Amino acid sequence: MKSVERSRYNGKIPFETRTLTFEPFQYSEIEMVMGLIAENLSPDLITKKYRKENEHNPMFGHCYHSSQALYYLIDTDVLQPMSAIDYHDCSHWWLEDTSCNKIYDITSNQYYHVGQIPPYEKGKKKKWYGWQQRPHQRSLNLMIRVLGDRVIEDRVDKLKPAL
Image (cartoon, rainbow, N blue to C red; front, side, top):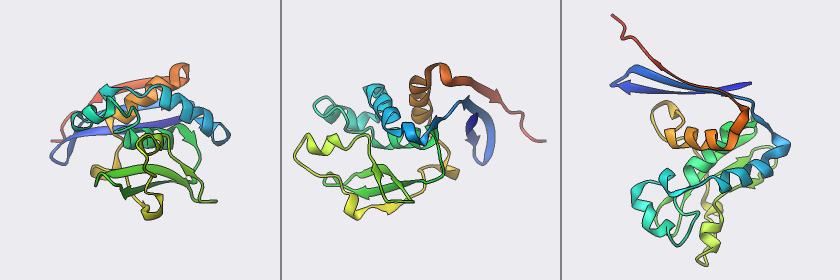
């Protein structure tokens, strides 16, 4: 069993916490999980500024939340978030296995689709975006789609402010 939490803040004070509890996938299932993630990507998960290009390039705009979802869904400690600036001058995200440098990139076809290559050579280890590297809501929503009956609980708790 694994839990992933995302708190919402008013300044630095948390007022709500979403906790997703689930049965994670084994590392040996990573390719299958990548396929499930790819099957569950949709335009509602993309930032609005990427939706126009996504109409003609279906993986465009999905790299961050798909990589973050994979990172949390797999029961391992060898996956490292990686990022590099691509030909669009945008950050591209993927995961790398730190034990063997194998790359896991669910959205790599966004490059091959337009005759480009992913920017792996410029990749650097990165922490997740956001305050305290908390998971994004889009990543959690994607995880719910992929997990199906492996979800044990998806709970939102309102927190009382400290006095």
